[in-house]
Structure formats: C-alpha cells, structure tokens
Length: 416
Image 1 (cartoon, rainbow, N blue to C red):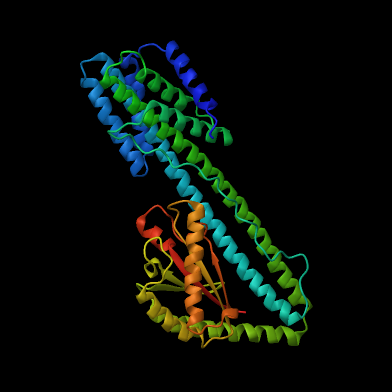
Image 2 (cartoon, rainbow, N blue to C red):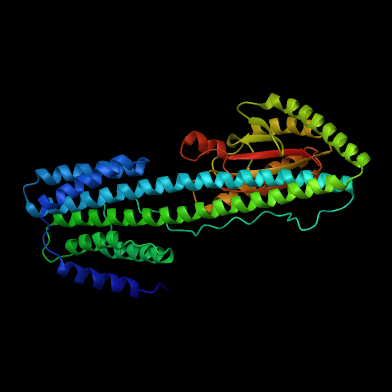
C-alpha cells in the first residue's frame, strides 16, 4: 500500500501556505506575465509548448476583460501557470533533441569501434597472435530512470483536489531523486489548490484555480523530464568518449601487430582485404535493386548496411507482412551467394514510448527477420541478432519523417 504521509504533509502545507497568502494585485503582476509569455514565445519549441502558450494568452485576455475581480484573479493564475508550463515544455523539447544528438554520437562511436575491432581481428589472424589488453566489448549504455508520463494539459473535466495532491507528491519525489529544485512551481500549485478549496469559493473561481493547479503539475512534469534527459545526454557523451578511446587502443594495437609481421604475412593480409572489399562491392551492387520503399542500401566502414523500412511490420507488432516476406526471400537468395559474409540483424525504434517497451519490440522485430532468413536457407551460424531500441538513431527524432527512418531493422553485412 502506498504511504499516505507525503499526501497528508502536502495537504497541511497547502493550508498553511494559503493562510499566509494575500489577494494578488493584477496590475503589478501583469507585466511579469507578459515577460514570461514573451520568453515562452522566444523559446517555444514543440506542439505542447505552443498549446500551453496559446492557453496562457487566451486566459490572460479573459482575465483582462472579466469584471468580477475574484474570477479575473483566478483566470490570471491559470494564465500564469500555463505560461510557466509553456517554458518548461520548451526545455523538455530542447533537452530531448540534445539527448538524441548525443545518443547518435555514441552510436556512431560504437560503429567506428566495431570496425576497428574487425580490422584488428583480421590482423590477429594473419599475425597468428592476439593483441593483449584490448577490450572486445564496448562500455555499457546507461539506463534511463523510468518516469511517470508528463501530466496532460487541463481539460473540461478537471481532476479532484486529492488526485492532484497525489500527483504532486509523485513529482516531488522524482525531483528529489534528481536533486532538482522545483519549489517555485510547487508554490504555484499550492496557491492554486488552496484557493480552489477555500470555503464558499465560487464555482467559476474553483474551476480556474484547479485549472491553474493542473498547469503547474504539467510544468513540474516537464522540468523533471528535462533534467532526466539532460543527464541521459551527459551519460551518452561520456560513453561516446570512452568508446572512442577504446577504438584508438584497437587501432594502435593493429598497427603494432602489423609492424612485427613478416613481409609475406603482411602481403597476404592486404590481398585478403582487397579481395574482401571487391566481394563487398559486388554484394552492394546486387542489393541496390531493393533501394526504395522496401529498404535503403548504404556502405559504411563496418560493411554494407541494408536498412529495412518499418513498413515490414504492422504498427507496434513484430510479425512480418506478406510483402516483406516476398522481398526478404529474394534477399536471402543473394546472401547465400556470399557465404563468407557475416550478417548482423539489428532492430531499432524511434524515441516514442517507454525505453523498455521499445527495446523489447526492436528485439522481437530483429528476431522475426532472422528467423525468416534462416527459414529461407541462410545459415544461422553466419548471423546474430540484437535489439537496440531507441539507443542508435540515424536521424533526429524531432520530425515524423525522421522517426520513421529510425524505426528499422538493419542487416549489417561484412566479411570476416
């Protein structure tokens, strides 16, 4: 059973906080509100920020024309908290974009590291000895703390005060976890909630103050999410730097091995790499026929990459569609002509939804493609499969078009 003490404390605090408050002077506060709205307009990013800002402007216009002073004050409170929510929503959007960019940087570093390890292992086989002290696994990706969903903007059916208090308790706990100060937003929430619960308060005033309290909860949610995203970005940057350092170690180890190899072994290694490059180019040309709606084909240092579109699957499902099976059957025929090539089947998603859910969905989709290729005759020992969830985007997740690019299954095909 959930501990009710935080809610009781919040309720008592609300009463005490309200007893000390005085009636607001709208003329004194209006200039501050205009400044907050102007700042929100300057920083506004994303639909949620725009919606909150529009709501704030509408409410402040209504407050200005309202003849009943208590109703005007309540509308002003709601306008002010909506403006703060607009600012917080913009911060979340910016933090998400920055975290996404740093996650892509870490993913690119990992792909470079994989290529360096592959080249090192080729050199080790030619030199007939192993480089010492080289890590064969990249640093683990940090897990983001799972947070409650951000409270939605207020609607016509506002929640009860008790549920608002419970929600505030959750966000206070989350903010404490991140050592994030949100006392100002919490103060606005308490002001609004206390006014809404005052004896003999008018229904119009109660509605607007509950509206204000709901906007404050939305602000608190955005601020906590923005901080969580900022820390996730910092972790991704640290991981990218660690992986780059490991890549450099692998490259120098390869150089050291080549220095000590006999001339004949070095020549044989170069010949092997040249023949492998020719075969990879042939494979690339063979797969280009699938370029278009079904897939995109590109070459990177780590091999030929066939990115299969998310149209392979129904929404949020891992079962292959019939059209996908027909095309993958054709791909399997080509892959069987290159038995020396290794195939990594990698599942990826966009950043919409919970991290754990996306990871499991990416794993299931990669496994579906793997199973079908095995069924069509591609040797299982040539392949491995892995789901990366949202951790390796190839484009920013800020637009629907880019999110679609990130929802994919990659066949990474390379010579060993």
